[in-house]
Length: 381
Image (tube, rainbow, N blue to C red; front, side, top):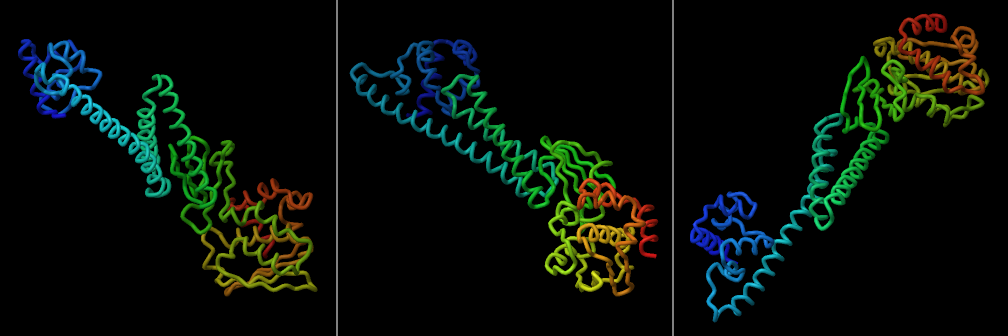
């Protein structure tokens, strides 16, 4: 099928009918630019346009496909030749169209996946390109369902887009939970004091102590927290929080592996430590590989010693005392001191360990500088 030859033939027949491109375009309900593309050989008329175009030009479809007036004696031969050519042309066009559709679907999904992998955590560009990739892929689905009604095509396209968006959002959520990474699909980001708040369509994420060794994440699926009420401690709550610490609750001092795991989960363990057990006196000696005054920015030492002491006495039933040794100083505390001077200690150890009271009266108090200083003086004077 010679597009150039057919294009020149269309132009010749149009001129013989004394029609402009604009007039022919109006009769066929297409643009004059489309007529120009046909006549220049850049495009072929769609098969559905063959008959109306031939009627307007006063030629047969056989003439159009041949690009010239077919003589009567050659008519049958040309007809058979043009039928074969048309079938081949249609197949090529269909294959090319299907290939484009497949590439749109696959390319769109690849763009979405790449956006989640390439851009840094918290970047809004990752969500923009992921959505763009989903749109491209959905358009491919719209093309591949062209035999259905417009309504069904729209429903299929919307359902496809929605399913993949849920998949990407779920993957994003799993990244936050298991890999402790900032979400990609956040539509609003806000930084307050020591936290970054990411708001996504399905949940909010609180990134506490960001860019520090004690960074941790809280996923608020029910959106029950605000910046003022979210559990906010100076420690890594993933390890030092009561949900993890309860695994190491014990009735007595002396279970070396359990005691080691408990101390490892508590603040200050990041500096390295060794510990000894006083079985007779039911005490713990914890030696940290750091000088106490080197780690006391924002009263981190006082907060850690308070938190560790209350946590250990709450979780090891018969622990009588704890001595913390640093290369600079030592600090000693007893259960009696905690029971007498730490506010609401009895509520923390109610029914073993009361998780809500632990968070309320210990964890949430660690950012109250005045409270920490006052209680630390009473317990470690």
